[in-house]
Structures are given as C-alpha cells and as structure tokens.
Image (cartoon, rainbow, N blue to C red):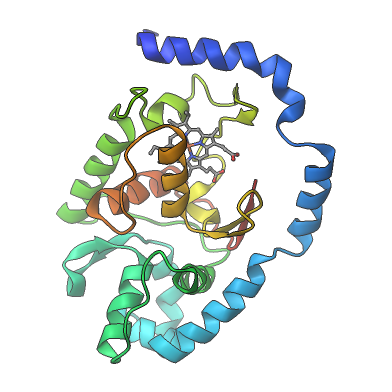
Length: 255
Ligand code: HEC
C-alpha cells in the first residue's frame, strides 16, 4: 500500500503515541460515569421534551407520515433511510429540515437547525426508528447518487492549515490508533449513522451527527461547514452509508 507523506506522518504520530497513552483514553472515573450513563442516558430528558415539541409543532407521527406521504406503520422504516431525497423540498434533506417544513406549513416559526430544541426533536423523531436497521439507499435516484459522490469528496478532500481530510484520521490504516489520547474510531463499526443524536459526555449535552462533524472540523482546523448545507447533508449521507444495516439506537452515548 502506498501512503501519502501526510498520511504516513500521521500514522507515525498515531503509532508512536498509542502505547504511551492507552491508559488516558478513558480514566476509571470516566468509565464509571459512562457505565452509569448507559443505564440512564441524560439525553432521555431532551428526547422527552423533543417529543412534546414534535406533537405541538408537527402533529406527531401522523403529521410527519402525512408530510412524507407514507403510512404511519411504514414510518420507522422510512425514517431509517434518512437523509433522503424529499420531493416536496426538492433536495436531499435531514429529518430536521423536514420538520422545519412541517412547522412552516402549520404556521409555526421553524426552529433553527442548531437549536437545542431542534436537536431534541430530531432525536425524538429518529428514535421512532429505534431497532430498525439503517436502510439508506445511495443509489435510489440521481439526487442521492450526487449527494453520495459529494459526501465522499468532502470526506476525502484535504483542507485547512494542516492539510487534513476526514479520511486522514478515519481510515483503516490508522483506526484503532490513539491521537492525542483519543482512539481513532471506525465510523462504520461504531455505527455513527445509527447512534447520533447522542449525549456527549465531554460537552454535557445532546449533539447531532452534523454537530459532531463540526467538532472534528474544529479540532482538525478545517473550515466549519454549516449544518443543513448541501455539503453537510452529503457528508451525512456518505457517513450514514458506512453503518448501513446497523440498528438505530437513539440516544447514543459518546465520550
Ligand atoms: C485529526 C484527526 C481527525 C480528523 C481530521 C477528523 N476526525 Fe473525526 N474523530 C477523530 C477522533 C480522535 C474521534 C474520537 C474522539 C472522541 O472519542 O471524542 C473522532 C470522532 C468522530 C465521529 C464520532 C464517531 C462515533 O463514535 O460516533 C465522527 C462522526 C467523526 N469523527 C467524523 C469526522 C468527519 C466527518 C471528519 C471530516 C470533516 C472528521 N471526523 C475528521 C479524529 C479526527
């Protein structure tokens, strides 16, 4: 295998650090807290509030099913295929953007995509598909094909002051290694597509997958792409496809 100089450098960095800092990945105290939170995820509260807002603003499951043109009984399977092309919105959209459109239709001021209330509503809506395997179809139509291709490009393009791409840290050659005390996760195996929105212990709050992407962009000095933009939705399509077949389990619990 031929590695670029940057990847090789990063690999050296990761390997040289991995033995020294394995013990720092999670302290015993953190591990105990993690075990406790697995039993009782603090984000359950956000989801409860999200569920109330979902009823109030979107008329609940009936309202969502109606907008999407699916029966209520098919709703969980349909939700497990997001982000998907939504004809009414003429774009590949997240569930949060669908809910914004429903709010508008119902005469409510749509919640901002980045608001905590929207994160809660998104977590609630996605949790309706809990235990359903992710069934995103990146070949469903030309819009999804284009989104997948754009997402792959965003994932692989090196940017920013350090010339890093998502792929620099999330690829099979470096995954499992430790970078600045943090293990580099395999996004597919970690079921990133099925476990966000998640409670992030280091942020003490409920975060969405796109918000998590922004966290990595910040850390790696990549210009931050706005939530809900075509590039960000495309990135979500690409990353979600890595977890295709894994069951949705919301809210996740992350470091
Ligand atoms: C400099 C290395 C680096 C780069 C570049 C990077 N990441 Fe990460 N990423 C990490 C590390 C380390 C973690 C785990 C951190 C932790 O556990 O808190 C992580 C975690 C994640 C997670 C959460 C995984 C889970 O378990 O659910 C996602 C999703 C993610 N990254 C996506 C991205 C995307 C998309 C990009 C490109 C925009 C990117 N990352 C760029 C190092 C990187």
